[in-house]
Image (cartoon, rainbow, N blue to C red; front, side, top):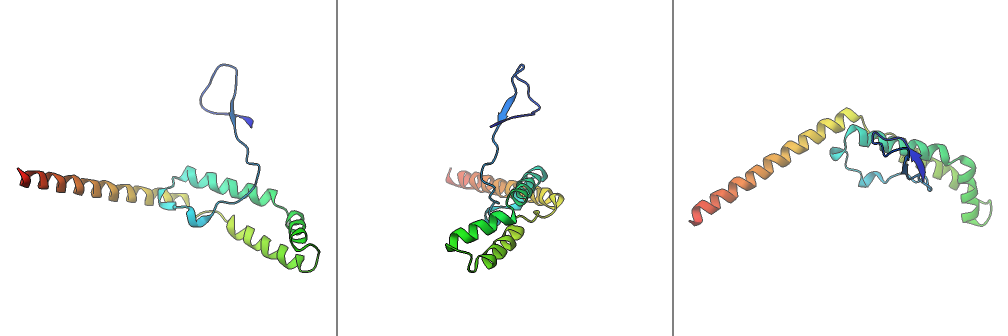
Amino acid sequence: MEAVTTRYAWGARPYLGFNYLSPVPMCRALIDLELMTSEDVAWVDALHETCREQITEELLMAAAVKGRNGAAGAEDDAKAAKEWLLTATEPLRGAAQCTQKRGQLWLKRVAAAAAVVALGCAVARRSK
């Protein structure tokens, strides 16, 4: 935990925030960009940048050597791990697109909800 600056104040005591202990990128398959704001995208991009900074080539090599119980083939494993890391931590697509798509998705959901309400009202009138 660490002291963080927020827009809220609570006397002289700072708010505390969590610091990530394990620099692991988020799985892109589980990220739905259509639901993300530009702030969300920026947060994920910053997390991925931290992963790139903290996971060094030496760390990847050490993990590869340990995983193989020796250096044979470890360089290839470390190279493949670095390529994966660079791909997994690439910035997400443009924030403006995400905000625009989020708005479009919201409008679709509102329209769908209105259709359900209208259908419910029509069914209720017929049943009277």
